Picture 1: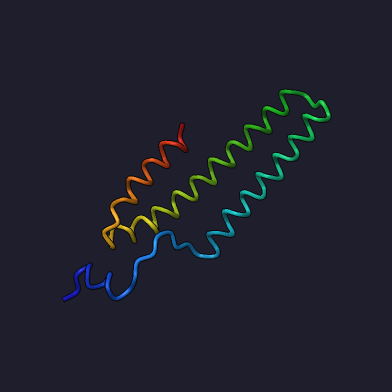
Picture 2: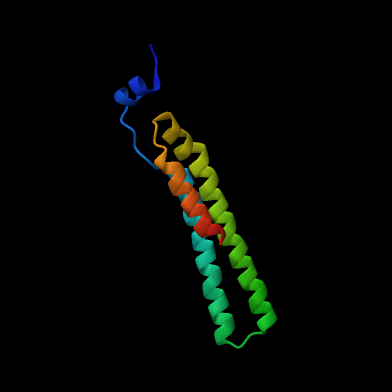
Length: 104
């Protein structure tokens, strides 16, 4: 008999397990955003044109949103599916709360 609970006993459940490749992809995106923000700070310090600064801020906002989408996709494809298999329904509530804060 292969029910979900039997599988759960055989392999302990751990939340939020991501591959090193996924972590690196997110960290690389965040490093680019950080570098871009530093460049914008220099633009402000140098008195660059406000329109150009706003355009660069929009690019940072888009990069942050895209990083959030990547994290969300990874979370749904791995963590959330695994949580359902192991009966962790609290994770759905956690995800909904996080989405509400992210999308504000």
